[in-house]
Amino acid sequence: MTQRPRLVGINHVALEVGDLEAALEFYAKVFRFELRGRVPGMAFIDIGDQFIALAEVRSQASDDSRHFGLVVDDLEAARAALEQAGAEILPGRGLDFRDPWGNHVQVVEYSRIQFSKTPEILRGMGVGDLAKSQDALAELREKGLR
Image (cartoon, rainbow, N blue to C red; front, side, top):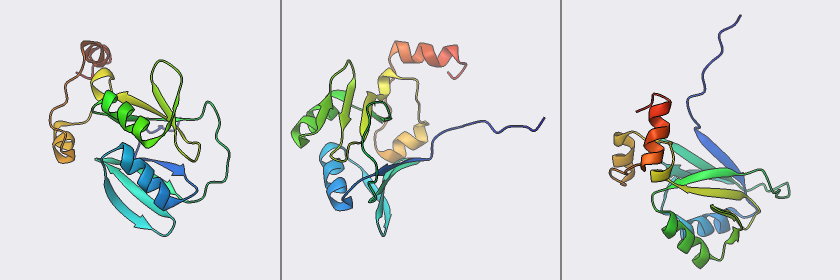
């Protein structure tokens, strides 16, 4: 049997948008980020050792279940920024929104989930040492990751 590779992370997520400049403006109203780079029709939003690729090629309608999740250092600040930007905040127990091109985005707070960045990556991103909740630490311990 052929050995299969282990998944170790996500390098990037690509989002289709109808207008690249408007998308950069929208996401800059909501999140602090550095632009990693640009090529014709695409821009790359840096998130430390990962990135979001914005592609100006919106070709499909939004749907209710396809989505991706972003991790932030402050969930309430994200909610306030989304409200101020006029984002469509979706009903539910978490913080989900739809961007102007129909992309469904779920936002979670770093302290509350098992997702972890190394201290070196956090320092490089300028967010310092983010603490984890007891529940998140328990999840990590259960998997032998802490």
